[in-house]
Length: 142
View (cartoon, rainbow, N blue to C red):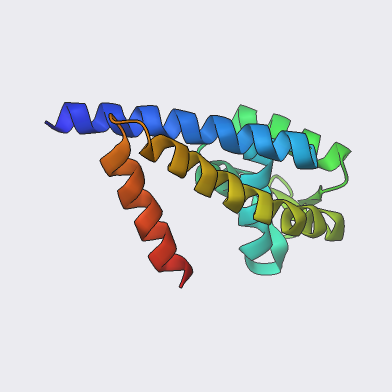
């Protein structure tokens, strides 16, 4: 039973991630990883995280988060800063433009998440799981 439930989680996750990424890219020109990075930076103290902390918080490896940081910097959504105590330490810092883009994209993210869970709830294989997640999300929103 655990394997079947896990398979359902994997399928649901893939579908939702695809819809979230598509909506964010189409409406705001950012991918899901960029959105998640901006989200983590926005709530971090001083709007900054060490690159490894950022990687860990969004589930990317060091190489992937470095490429992600380059894209965010090129768009003016973040900037790099050196750690004053350890010059080897590099921080990613959210900019005002990054906060603005995040604010604009958050409604899209939430709408796409709701729509993806609703669509998954109509799939007999995923109904129970998607409904449970949708209900939990509604409770958390209140």
